[in-house]
Amino acid sequence: MSIVEDEKCYYLYGFSKGAESVMKVVKAAYDKLYPSPIEVMTIGAYKTANVDFRPYNIQFKNYFDESGKGQRSPGIYVAGIPHNKMQQYVLKEESEKK
Image 1 (cartoon, rainbow, N blue to C red):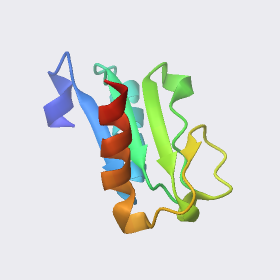
Image 2 (cartoon, rainbow, N blue to C red; image 1 turned 30 degrees about the vertical axis):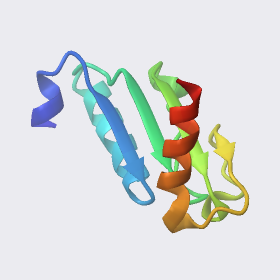
Image 3 (cartoon, rainbow, N blue to C red; image 1 turned 135 degrees about the horizontal axis):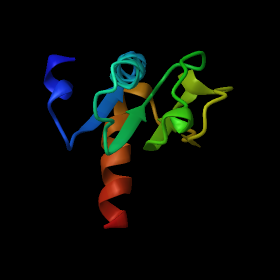
């Protein structure tokens, strides 16, 4: 939190269990009135992880693999890509959008 306390511009990224850590940082920053991240991206969050950043008015992208099937947070479900290959898949997808 000491890093984001003084940052006016930052982005957060979390893969797998790290997606839950991103939500913890967002909640803590919100509670302490610290600046919010510009955008959040999570990849491979488990189906029970809360990665819905809409209440914090933050732009975000969530990509879910098989472990996230049934996820209630908004995002893109990617079928057929193993969990350990999701980061490569998303990098390729995001690179092609630019």
